[in-house]
Image (cartoon, rainbow, N blue to C red; front, side, top):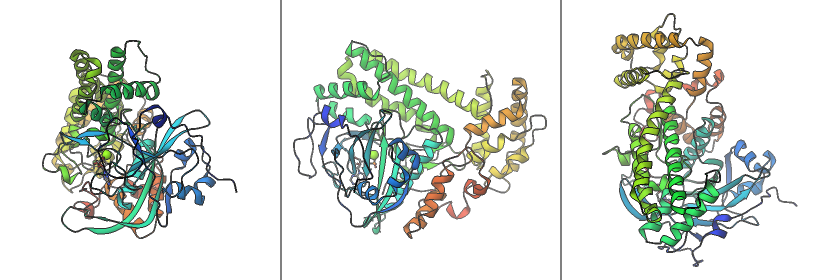
Length: 524
Ligand code: AMP
Ligand code: MG
């Protein structure tokens, strides 16, 4: 029988970069190498929960191939295909502001890189497929709960046009994994799962940081050159290696800024913006205790592990990204040997971000051109939104319906969480709406056109925290229907899809304080 899965592998990362000569899989510090060979751990009884057909298409996989037994065997880690060269990579990172030393792919195993029929290259990576030399004290596994969250959110973000790693598949392993969800001394078994992630590259800031921390500067140079050549093929290269590195760093700054602007547009809070969770390509990576803003609150973070300092709260994501870029600048400093151009790049991150953020907010409000007064208008709006629990997603979606000839706050009623919330901000809202309507009238754009444009950037459907939890509750009972239904709804987040109105509803009261809905730990 011919196998259903046929890929053309070209595992550049392992052929071009030095690996760890040790073949045994035990936890250790790995010097002078970018990766270690390690095979996924076979699982007892893999079962496919869901797959993303759009990602399958990127890999030239037909629906029949994705529904084959071979598919679930391969993407749960049970079977290795010809041409695969599984490996885990070495990286370090700053966690919550402190240097944490070697971290690495502790529960991610790269299967290899494929080149599809159009010549595009995709790296395939299993998350939760068993221990690696980088697993430190942990087990290398993942539970269904966190895997549903990673799988659905990766795809939801992609369909929202937010730069992200993708998810091909989600499978349960038939094995249980013990986790203490709230870190309160109550460990319990949960179903194990594996997600197959897909991205052009999984390189993180931490891959560079670890080499500099170890003074492995020759290897640092190799990895930077490799990354520029392969992951940034469109970057204008310079023959001068210093100039090339600086140019590349500027590009990483710009991509990172664009990613954060997109998070702010859709109300996404990453939750653990450690430098090991920052993709060099500016992709959202590592979906852990992330969350979606329900009521607009710049102070909010879903991550209970970060509750005391709220370092990674919604409103702090841009400054943190800049801090992370500073760590990357420190890491590549030995190759540049000059502080100025790196500092300039970091400074321009600030101005570039502000500009892109303002432009993004203008599109959310339906403006086609910028105006000097917009900054104030936006600031006042955000202040009103934060003053009363107001659902960010519903608010912006409803705002599109405004009739600028008769601005009426009644269109916004559904966005408020408390009964008299709207009344408490009524005057401010009315004043703001009238300024807003005047601003729109001044621009003179057709109302229907404006509504359509706003609905293209203000989603109706996002992966609300409680929705993910409902899908998890069902999945843990063996019913994967809601995972697949949400995957489907989130494919078209900007479309009305009236049959799925209930998935656009604001957070119900029961979800306000429930673990998994408003509070998440790093336990996964
Ligand atoms: P995270 O906070 O999920 O980004 O993880 C930080 C580091 O811990 C990374 O190096 C992960 O690979 C590692 N890690 C997280 N969970 C596990 C686990 N269950 N087993 C092994 N390593 C893990
Ligand atoms: Mg991570």
